[in-house]
Length: 433
Ligand code: EPZ
Image (cartoon, rainbow, N blue to C red):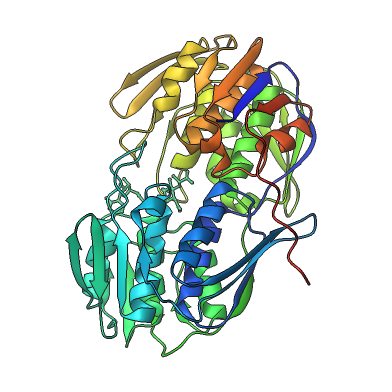
């Protein structure tokens, strides 16, 4: 199992580039199931979850070309024939986002069998809202032997009100409704940029979707969808992680290839904390930590509120701020596992239910720590960048799920970080043509 060895203390200086958004690429790849024509996606991140999605789509009979190279990170998916409209437990248990195939499969094939995802480190994360939404569109759902089976001759448009805001629930239903008979109006939808990016792809494929990115999305179903080309939006969570690394490291960091419009909540909180972030170009921000960090309270909310996927990374920053910062996690019930590892590095953090009280500034010292989930791992990397000594982070496969060669990117701006352990899988060959 790979580990990271990080020696803290180097300020980060230079330009670090953000990859395409994992959480936009995954639904976009699932959308290719809706048509028998090729769907070509650019700016695909070279991360483990994309490899998992590829295996999942191929297990159903789709053809997936996936190539990474200097110029392009791209995939072309052709789901001409889907012999097995099923997402098996072996793959779903490693990536919950596999449930994103449920809607497209039942819409395209009339049947879908998807393993229930089971538990996850950060919370129960049920998919009851996906299921209720599909039932509203006329699907017959049975759950047995740990699988959800959805059947429908043809889905029918309907009104759908989400009891809770769910990102992949909104995406799943939007894909299903795209091929339904009639109009669907979904309310209380997730407003994340990844939802709007998926709608942009679906409309290029011939769907008729309005309102994505707002709470109400109207979908007029069509008979058939065609292939399309689409460029995935930048990863706002990766961008936020690097911006926080720049704020912590006390250097002068340019974060390029990002979309500053997706980061407003973070910028506001960083200003409160005394960190200046300047937009230098439409896709580039500059982070310079000037003076002491000030304690700042954050409360995670659905987009455009402060993102839960940045909570762990912000906690690392809070340990270096003067005073008490209260961090409230409203989205998931168990998303503070990074806290105990930060405490082992010297942080002063008390957990009270959904709140974590961080008292800073506490010097951090290197330790052997354990990554527990994707964003907790990122938090430990940030802490290690400012810890005194050499930190060893184990189980970095968690971070490889959502960050493209993070150690190479950070080393490129002066961090002392190296990966030890198994040899990395060979970079997939560049896509021909
Ligand atoms: C998406 O997960 C993201 N993943 C997560 O990012 C992100 O943390 C989350 O949205 C919240 O922003 C992808 O987009 C692939 P939800 P998702 O459905 O869709 C409850 C990362 O680090 N809920 O919006 O699974 C759920 O338990 C990952 O990149 C139900 O109760 O999250 C949670 O409390 C982690 N029933 C809340 O809603 C349902 O049917 C929000 O979950 C669905 C969700």
